[in-house]
Length: 257
Image (tube, rainbow, N blue to C red; front, top):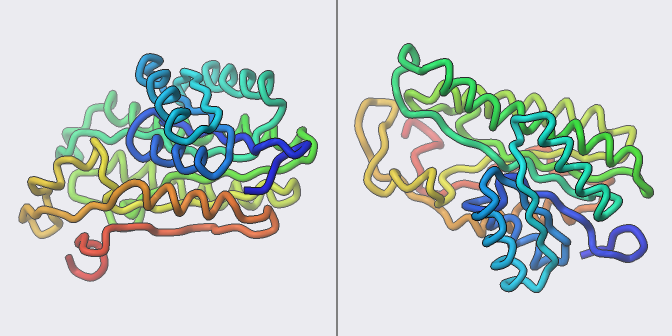
C-alpha cells in the first residue's frame, strides 16, 4: 500500500475490531501494510485480538477500548489516536448490534435505544471526531467506510431497529461524502449480506423468511468483506466507492426469495 505522512504506514481505526467482520477487516488492513487500531467495549477480548492480529500479519495493532455510543469515550479514543500517531487515514465504522427478532410492537425502548446507540449514534460520533482530525492533519483528508447492510433496503421480518439504523447509515454515508468533499475526506459504504459471524450463526439452522417459512441461508467468509474494504481503502482520495454490496450468492435476497 502507499505510505502515509513521511513515508510511514497509514493509520486505520476499525471499530468493533475484536471479533467477527471487524476482526477480519483489521486483519486484512494489517496484511496490506496499515498500522491498525481496533476498538471495542471488552478490553480483554480486544487485547487478545490485537496480539493475535499482530502475530498473524506482522503489523502494528493497537487495542483501545471504547464505547462508540458514548461521546466522552469516543473523544478519548480519537485523542489517544492523535496523541500516538498524529493522524488518522482510515476510519471503518464497523461496530454494531442487532435486537431480538420479535414483533415490532413488542420491541422494548431499551432494545431500540441500544441498537440506535451502537449502529447509528456510534457511527456519527466516530465520523464527527474523524472529521476534526482529518481536516486538521497534514496532509489533510482521509477515508471513512461505513458498515451497512442489505437489510437497509430489503428488511427481514421483525427487524425494525436494525433495519432503521442501517437505512440511516446510507444517509450518513452520503452526507459525509458531501461534507467531506472540500477537505479530501472520502466516504463510502459496504452493504454486507450474510457474512459468517456470531450474529449469523442462526442462519445455519434456519431463519424466518418474508413468506412466514423458515429456511437455511448461505453465508460467506468475512475475509471477502475484508478484501473489499482493503480495495476501497486503497483508492486515491480522488476516487471513491460510494456503495458496494458483498453478499452470499445463494442467499434469498434478489428477487422474490
